[in-house]
Length: 225
Image 1 (cartoon, helix red, strand yellow):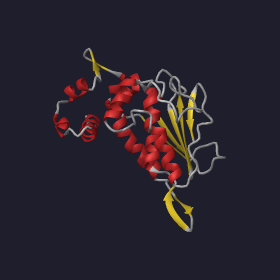
Image 2: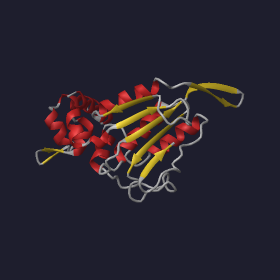
Image 3: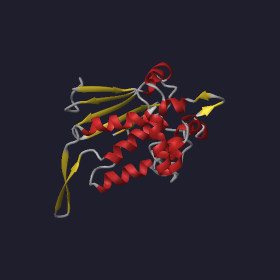
Image 4: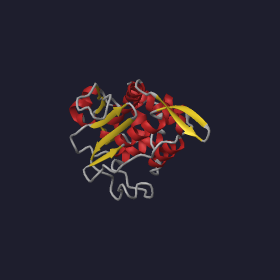
């Protein structure tokens, strides 16, 4: 499957192990503990599983992208749903977000810079974190709400144990989905030590934008603006 090939390429690049791409798929899944006692894990299904298997066993892994031309609008102008293995889904999702990624002017001193509304690294990090850390026992999908100059990621399950919106930048949490987070880290997708939120802050502030806002989050959901 294509998603496993992408996993192998990203692992080989991140771990500086080019021979990894030539390993049999079964060995790759075993080496990364994505197979347990001969059975496919939920992490393997999320990362590399077929769409029909995701629909059967993990329909809540679907990500919904809704675009509205104004925050005051209730009906959406466009809606897309993604139920694909993560390594393929993230590319499609960023592509569709980037289709409506207008440029904005940001001033720094006497200079004016023309930059995209949505920084690719920031958006990918936000979505990667949502996939890695959400509570898959909850049946609701993850929502990405896009406006011309704003993007919101809504995720069910609240913050992982020990994390709150107050200590988000200071604490290293225990991953809710340890195997999933581990493989995503080994393939260079997420930061293992919880530095992903730091990266989002740094990128946004370096571009002269306001930092991310988690104030709408509570014990039942994480909402990133």
